[in-house]
Image (cartoon, each protein chain N blue to C red):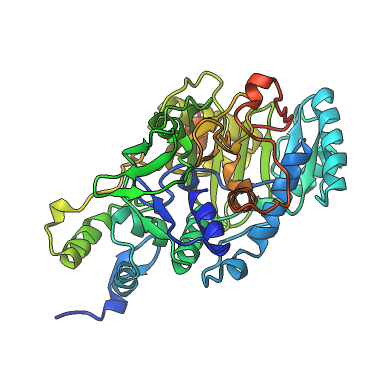
Length: 93
Length: 368
């Protein structure tokens, strides 16, 4: 059963729906890097762990290619959200 | 820069403009910078360029006729001085800025604390504050110029690097080569930022610029607690809270070598955290979401090169912004477009590359 596109959340951090993503693609933003800069998809605290695995499928369907052919954006460190205070070494150790 | 120049040329009636972007729009320094906009400069030239650019930022949606707002935040820049000598320079700068319609003022450490309550003022001798300085969203600004340029007929080709530039027997530009095509043209604008030297080499020019990595990080979102950008040249830091809540921050590593490296380092992460938490202790509980890097394209006097080449006619340069390109791009693009269409620019610039050999360096006392 297909949900209404307005109700399917692709990016939880930025609250982006499938409808909004499809509109962005239709507007000419057709790579993940471009969609990322236009909508902030993938820039939230989850670092794309929710959305990146979905956007590649959406773009692949749009382009008529396989998911593997969709370029992923650069992975940016750090791997986990470390507090600045801990990095600054003022934690009690 | 490229998009702004293309837009301004199109606005002056030029058609047949092609913009080549090697990756996605904004993939260079524009999409990587802190995107702070300050008017607090120490030379007349930079003050005028920044003041005029701020005017454009303030009215950008209207001027470019775009719907989406560019996220302009104007809650000031607070510059901190850690010595009397630095403070004396600030006072000189403020006098110059005020004479050029920039509403900056001197602040005491106590006044600095009023403006940024969580500021650690230990060692701070005084400061300078300009309430109309601020920040804009670089992705939205890029998008606005792109949409406006495209609407005026500019042919924007993304994921299309320039591979070579061909010259004819008179050393004049004949064509630009991409993987897909050969574009016949007599004029080229090199606005390639960190890669501008490489573009210069295509026409046999040795442009006196070097590229240098600068790193930056962003934290998770929190409720608004800091109005202005806090910056210090001597302490070496800039740190601001962007409109949606995250903190953006960076500093210049004096040991950073010339390179095209845009990878991130753990050394930056640790040093940045140290500096930030010391200056703004409130930040200690914020989590880093991500770090990245971009390239400063640096000239010997850290002022840009905005000029036509003397030896290769038709080769224009808008590069070498040395870390303050975003904030002066709107007006600079205007000026270059005037230069290229034979009109008198609103601000006369003497930013040709020959100035370095002549010794006409423009020494700006207010750089990061």
